[in-house]
Image (cartoon, rainbow, N blue to C red; front, side, top):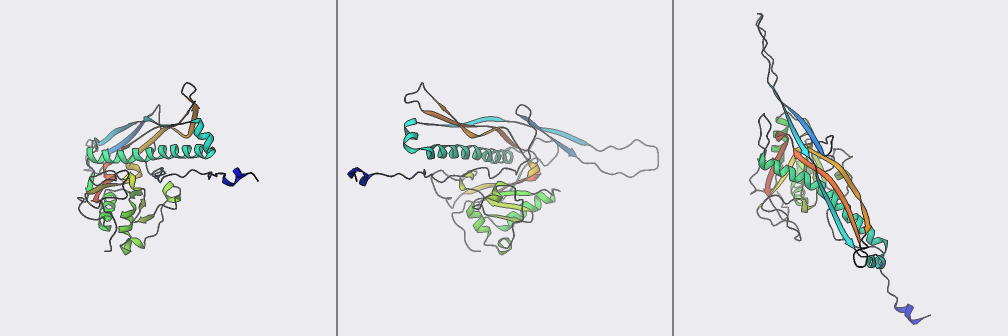
Length: 309
């Protein structure tokens, strides 16, 4: 046997990846539209129709006032790209391409999630321009207290009290779920929500349905709203300041993806030294708030860990 074979170096085929959110957790939680060249219109009917008593005389009718507003969404274009050298691919084999494709797909899915959350945050800050009231989004909590089951009940009561019978979605950090599980009423709740949503099929997503609200966990990196928001490269939250989270009904938040290229394209660049490849995914999408009474901003302490209650 040749001496050289004694010292042959072997490299495992798979490329290890740093942890990151896979994305797509919020798919199916919003109201889709029918896009025409990237523009979607959501008609919103308002006003109230009330009965009136007949007098027995021949009088003109007393018609009710009905408002029709139009909320328009225009999609924006996005892409993610990365270079890699042909020489690196030769050294690492197909596992490098697989990792790049997976990372680019995650990037695109995260962007679709982020567009929804950004729209909720902007809606909560700016309010609605609809003809009818309410126009402002209610904020529950002042950011000084830990998440409590009472806060969740407040959000449910306000949304259902306005007349909604829609499902409510409420994504929260893992540490908030752990805190809510300290309450026996919540811990004993069974998950009875829809099974066709991405978060429902992910074994690492904790989820509960409480009084018709689907509460589920998504990675910390999504929670950047508020003075105690997530900071990249740091684990968890600071334990001080506050986080803004959002609960909404499907009818209250519009979202449309006009063009969705999730599968990576890969093209050589012969005019670059070494003929590197450029890999891309692209997206044309947007989200916006529609019904202010169907959205709640929940502002609570950015806790670092759960405590027993």
